[in-house]
Length: 153
Image 1 (cartoon, rainbow, N blue to C red):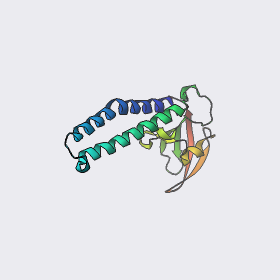
Image 2: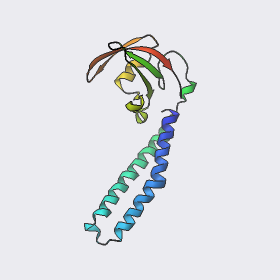
Image 3: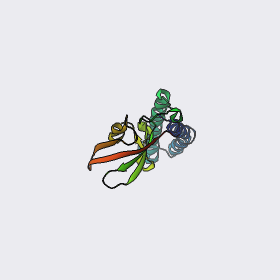
Image 4: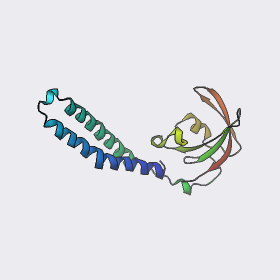
């Protein structure tokens, strides 16, 4: 994963541990004070939220512990690799779009980050500026030309 993606996951983990976990523990404590737990909806909702938070904490801790952080700025070359930012032109419409190839946990299409496992990213790996690619999408086949390849953080 990229350094930025690693930092985002670390920030989420810190937020869960320092804010969300104590808040749900307080909610459980408050709900317990209301009496009979078998009919206490607030208690059951808080326990379910606690389970979700603890699961996400475990998932993030595992991912961060196993993550290989790649400094994108240290990558050079003309070939498209993990971390590359690629400017593509749709060969039908000439519309240009920029994407960065990132790890699965970092992908966000609205922000222009696509997962290394996405069909478009898999088609781009190994290509260079000036190459054309064809990708089969749910909406049909699309052809793109690689306009520019860069490695920025």
